[in-house]
Length: 106
Image 1: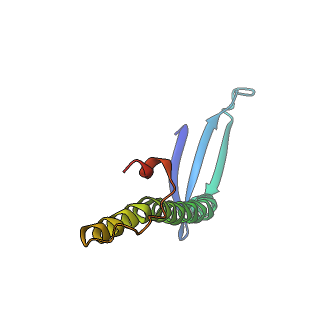
Image 2: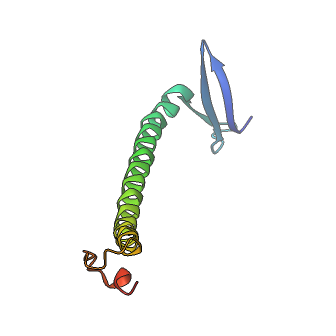
Image 3: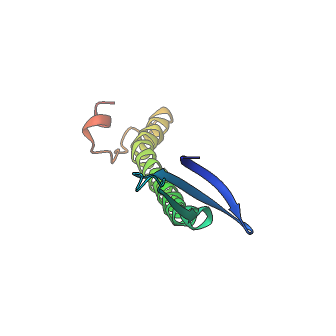
């Protein structure tokens, strides 16, 4: 009987903890603690919603960051490809507006 149990009281489940205390005058003394499982779980519902919102925000920020990084990489490469196409057609006077050290050596 001592320990933690789940008991249905009416229409609701309750968590009940039975603790044996010291005996007084030959009488066994126990403490019974109880709480509604619905009420206990309700506090986690708001936590779950907060975590879901944080995960969603993190995904949005990650996606936006990846799009910005991809655009930052592909824009200079695209400009170089366009300039190479002009050179292929004989236009040697066109300047390439790429002023980045990582792509400038191309």
